[in-house]
Each structure stands twice: as structure tokens, then as C-alpha cells.
Length: 393
Ligand code: PLP
Image 1 (cartoon, rainbow, N blue to C red):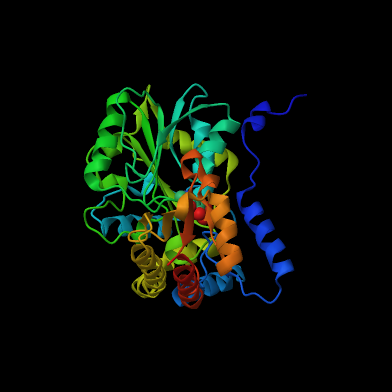
Image 2: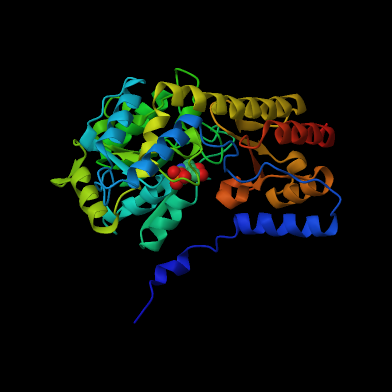
């Protein structure tokens, strides 16, 4: 018997553990100090009342013989897929019901999608990036190459025609850099992928933070994307479902390679390894896209947007280089005085008692950068921004 030796290729998942470790050590030594956390990307506002009401009603349905539900469809209930389809219409994208797959979140689908690809496919991943793309391919033994995201390209790498990739991961607005591609940049990526016969795996988990028309809410707003892209989306950030778990993936019927349909293969994969999202959760998710649901969640998103604006405004005032903050809940800043990421982490913790995330945890190009999130409460964010301004002025 042999375990999968490719697990030796993935690094220890130590980023948030080390953040927690250093924070706990500091707290133990300074129990009188109040720590403000702008580190992890979890939301802090509760689920919207419309979502809670729909989930309560669904719980009641489960208690009655006539309305009880057992196993649901692998790809999600029609009522939820219909509302996702209508949500796409609000930004001018037409997708078929049978192109939408409901799941327990974008992370699972992003991590599981490589099941349908060949082990010989070459994977192009931006650096720095959300670590799931890299680790799930390394586990399967695939070769990974990197597209350098740097301060020089605004953390938005563009296609290099000399590079031949088969699978291309993109995340816009990006975690951790907060940078977002505009439609013309995405068109270049779509044309590049189509010319190579490659597939783009487009992570749109933060699309709800986009406020500018020149940016895309969905890769399918770009002409040609239906023949080369799969889109991953989530209820986590738009509606606070990080603990409730629901997401969706869109796979167009036109996405065919070597006579094989990605849509069909994914349905086959899901029906083998996945038994659907709870009915109660799907009812809650569908309520997000009702009129009252949208108006309630928009109030929450506005809170996070104001936080992001406050943090970004402070960086501008301090003359610190940063990306994000505008169409994203993340502010990605260059550590002052050429400090390293962990050095700045310790400096900020010791002198302002503010916790953020060291950029190097997201890739080589994250060295010397630092991520702050706008998902904290308004009070904590305002206090943290005041302390950061005092320290760095
Ligand atoms: N994609 C990106 C870029 C993320 O940052 C996250 C979570 O932080 C996810 C996907 C995961 O989303 P979900 O909660 O739907 O699994």
C-alpha cells in the first residue's frame, strides 16, 4: 500500500495557524491590550432576515410527511437554479438551467473540478493567489506554472503567448490582491484560451463587490467565454453563507474538448461523489435573490464597502502603495520601509494591536505585501484604521 506521494509537494497549511499562534502569544504576554482583527476573510454580519425566514419555513416543511424532502437533485433544486439564472440576467448574461450546478460552496467545486481534467494538463495559476487552486492540482500530480502578479502590472497579469497552458485559473476581484480585471483585459484572456484550446476556471466569489461598469461581474459577459470558461460563484461573501455553505458553478454546453463535454463530465462526477446541498440551505440561498433578500444583503455589502473605502483612504493618505479596496473587500498593501510580510505583521501587532495577513502566505510574489480585510465590524475597522494611521504617519 502506498499513500499519494504528491501530498509531499504541498506545503504545510501554516498561514492562518501561524497568524493565530503569534496573536495568541502576544495576547498571553499583554492581556490588557485590545486586539483588532482584520486578518481572515470571514464575514461578520448575520444572515439576512429574508434568508432566515425562508430557512425556518423549510425546516417546518421537513417536519411534515407531505412536504418532507429526502435526497435532492445532484445539481440543485430547480427553484434555486431558476433564481441563479435570473440573477445572471441582471448583468446581461444568459445561462441555461442545465448549465448551473449548485454545491456546498466554491471551495469544493474549485478543488474538485480537476477530477475531470487529464493529469497531463499544464495548469497556469497567478501568483499570489487563493491557495486552493495550487494545492488541489499538486495533490493530483499536475504541473503548475505561474503568471506573475506584481506591483508593476497592478497584480493583474496578462496572457503571455509564449506560454502554453491547458487550464488557467483566474480570480477577479482577486483574493488576496483585491485587483479586478476590466472587460478588455478579460477579452484578451478569453481569446488566448480559445486560441490554445485551454479552459479558464474563473473564480467570481467576490463579484458582488464590483461597482464599476468597465469591470465584469461574470466571465460570460465576455464574447467567446462560453467556449472556454467555467465560472465558480458563492453565497459566502454576497450573503454571509460562509458557515451555511452554498455556491454554484456554471459550465456552458459549448465547452467541449476532444469530443467530451465538461458539463456532462461534471454532472457525472457530482452524481458519483456528491449528494447535493440541504433543501433548507437551498431555500435560504434562493431567498437571497428575492426583492427583500437583495435589499437586505445590499445593506450588509454596503457596510463592507464602507470599511474597504476607509482602509483604502487611509493608505492613500499615508502614501502607501496598495491595490483593491474599491471593487473588493481586500486591501493589499506594500509593507512600509521595505519590511517583510511577517516583519510587518509583528510590527503592526506589537505597536497597534492590529492583526492582518502576511502576503507571502499567498505565493512568492506576496513577499513584502500584506492583506487587510473589510469584513470586520464598522467599529473595529474604524478603530483599527485610526491606530494604523497613528503608527505609520
Ligand atoms: N474563492 C475565493 C477566491 C475565496 O477567497 C474563497 C473564500 O474565502 C472561496 C472561493 C471559497 O468560497 P466558499 O465559501 O463558497 O467555499
